[in-house]
Length: 631
Image 1: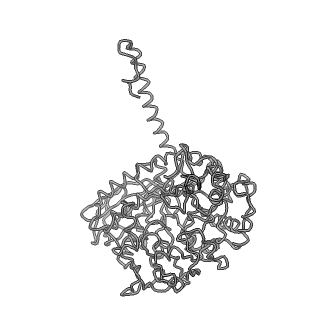
Image 2: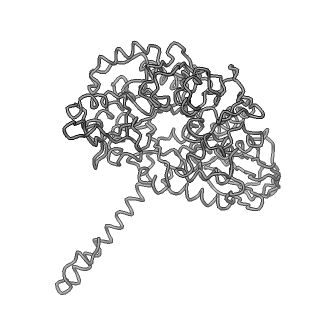
């Protein structure tokens, strides 16, 4: 409030009126500050989400569990690059990624064109078949990229939100016939297809193993194959769904206009749902709310145990806040313990409005990736240990405590280069400059190195894992990172998963189709896999690493040593990281006169003088020291 513009002329103001006005103004400020403080102290994030390790699955590339439902040329119509005439087949799962297969060479197009046409046949049965593998790894929650019906490999171009893609289920033809009989905007008319039922079986199998599962909600746009959009294309302004999309102009020969609409960031395959000042408009909003309830409470009986445990929201920043506020109320009314996380690849300041308790519980923590890359991955342009500690504190304290502990701390996703390839290409391009450098991380950039990582790069990832699994926030693994997969940015981080029972061709081709001097052997890295399992087990066995307080103990810029404690009233764990290429001896002040056990390194005992630990730490390595007390 600007007092100079809102009080009466000076001659008419009494002292008492001025005092009252000022008190009212100050009280408003104080009340607002108190409200914000109270809100920041409310724990609105589900407890389970703070205690799990996440595993992201890109369904089409994870496991082909049922070859009878494999995609067909007909099933991918409507997806880029819209080539339904060239030869096509399901791509060999174990083939060399950059090698054009005989059927691809016929069309005369380059590798980047053909990578978009490829389908490998990953499906829901494949995920079900590998749930024991995921559980054995130590995972507590799974996030699936889109599973709703769509023609593309990534399925962000939804044809519908109330059915699982038929080619992910056991009876694609039968499912499509059933779907055609529906009135798609009438929930009372919806059927359960075989793919839908298999998805519910997947959810049940995940829950039987004590894990959670969330799925991708792509609510900013649909695809050109969507039933609503196809009706608009056909019937134009006479369509029942004409107000669903952002239409610029209609087909009109008299006016000389053509049908034009707003595509997500100009991508015509992704027509945007229309928004007003309150977000997505009423009709598609109702549809989204209806499908939300369908997948969270499939039996519509008030028991959400048979439904998904939350959502990841695609390009959430593209939808206005009022929509998300209303949608959260719907979600939490079905399952108060549902977890909502958003894709907002932006600054902390941009994230904060979404994370005050009335929209999302967390975001995919890309700022964690940016910061850890600047400290661990970069060398010539790396930040110092003291700067790392300072920026960690800023990031950790930017949100309510409950949000910081529920953040998904990731090193990569389907939208980034693989973490190992990121390490291979250290110092080249800052990932924090996301928009500027996004294309530079792609294999089409001749300066980007797509080779297999060497052992020294594997060791750097191990060091990063020690930090990821012991820091505040929920660790997040992108499928295949645990077995050493590598790859440049989209589409190359979406290679078929490596499985130990399959024999893969060596990678002998470069992206430009030249032959490598030395072929890269393509198989799982069992040593890295076991290291992942060990770190995840340490985190799962020590809840203090999930929910304990964080305290910096030592910052040594010269030696590259960073030490911190995770602690609660019952336990303390000390983590020491040596982010340098030289071994070091450290002296660390502690609160106890006891022995500590290094649970990372063969339960080695670390001797201590009164309230002091002295130990050696190898180059590019770490220690995780534990001492139980108050038993």
